[in-house]
Image (cartoon, rainbow, N blue to C red):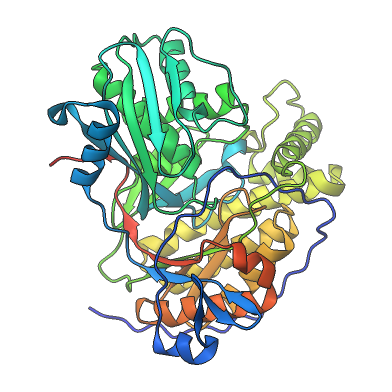
Length: 466
């Protein structure tokens, strides 16, 4: 049954103090994709100049739809020509990117989150190296990565091979014997940041090393292994949302993660739910002045938890907001001030939004689900205080665009992209409108953007079978 959704106009306009925001450098280069030229864009944007659509003197953000062609034979040929790999031994891992509709910034505090994989991915073509050597190339990065399983180099902030090294370290630290290295070639489809492409890369390397060494692990074990890559080897302080979504997601299901019990539920999409499409709108914010405020906010959450637990009388408990019940928070939140108070408010209201969102999903109420996504975005700005000025502009544009059901930042919230659910028959016009309005609002950032993508839900990571 087809249900038409009537758009609800949004009138939220968010402002924030950007003086605290520092952005993180990204080594990933833009993926070059042909421009989608529609009659409307040609009328509004004028002639093409170079590789971008132009409204003189602005370069207009690109719009493109559908997955890029995936040619496993071409990838296998690339690996054979580079490393002489036996074609019969070559395998390909597809590790998708993910979105988190509701549950922003609370996984590291043991909160509940929702997620789904999308039809954009990292592909790792690999084969056994025949020794303990690891040799890697990529069309996303310059140079080649080489190391040995028995001599894994430490983290190097200038190297794109960190996730491969981290995968080896995580597997060996967990007691798995690795004797066989790999030769590998990675390619990807989108890479400005915000969809957990780093976690997707880590999962891909784990699956490759496991395959060539006949290491059998459960999905939950791979989630923990990827957490070790990011927390222990790379020193990041994120939770398990990204890798869980990438590994566990299934098409036409909402992945619901309980980060406290480390359990998950795949909630099927009801037949009564109207169809939807996913927009990924990139901000063009990639480079950093110093670093993001991500870890600072984790510290502030910890400070809030310590104060609350002290007031409750459980000071010995781990200082995580997930160890405090909503009732305890309401009783003792008067003990909090300043930034820790805001972080706690975001945690508990966002946790409630996840619960409400799951109920809306089960009921097939896509309008309510979309509203909760936008409320999550608003709290991320006002209470968690993530977001740079370009990202907040992009969020405001999305929630005002006809056909958009809900929108929020994706990823850490300081750079990268915003995501939105949109009515399928309005996806293309919405993407065009977002591209046009964002270019007017942020011309310099739009010129650096990887564009507006029209995507769809997809299955989680797997080794592709011929």
